[in-house]
Image 1: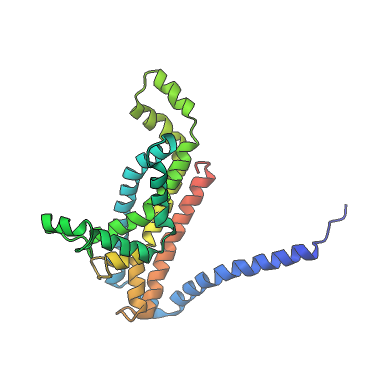
Image 2 (image 1 turned 60 degrees about the horizontal axis):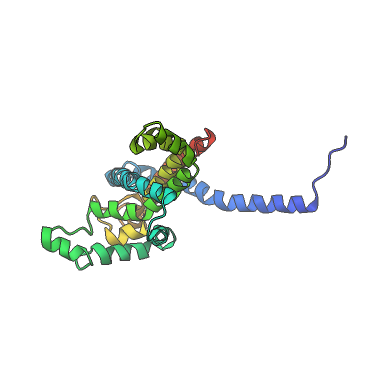
Length: 269
């Protein structure tokens, strides 16, 4: 049996696919090459500022993801199972941080929680605490832009669970909390895990909203993406430091991506 030769159209599509793949490959290859070729970039990896920014990023994203799960899970279940007044408005509000430019999100947070903000001014008057330009502001900014991604994934997971299974468990005497914990969550665990990973990835890469709302203060609010900006704009680490920091972010992103792939491969997503 003779093998068919690829047609001209197939070869053209394959060439376009190759060019498209190389378009995404070369920037990452260039980053790794520059980090390995420039000894100053390798030295920058050992700079205390890199470790400080990494620790701040990991701590703040861990808190923001935890908050997203604690508050986002019941909201996602409510949207998936109930028709509530204003549900469409809530749905739209959850979409806004996803589609808005991060800088606009930062300005919005500042006008709400800033020293002269809608809520920030009375809170400061009552407590003396100002939220902007603190580590807590970093967590708020990360949660604001990343939590909707988790809610979207969690809602899809809950909608995929057959409500009849929950109803049967209820008729057998199980409480709502028991049904949710032992039936609903295990059946929706794939999308929940995938949503949590996506939420963490978005929080880790957050830049614009954090820069405006929390500032870029080394050792206080300077996460890895902000440290890259500071180094690139003439900070002490310079361009080699920006390369080193970018390589750290790339490595963390690869870990997150592999985690998401493993979840999907096991049939949980």
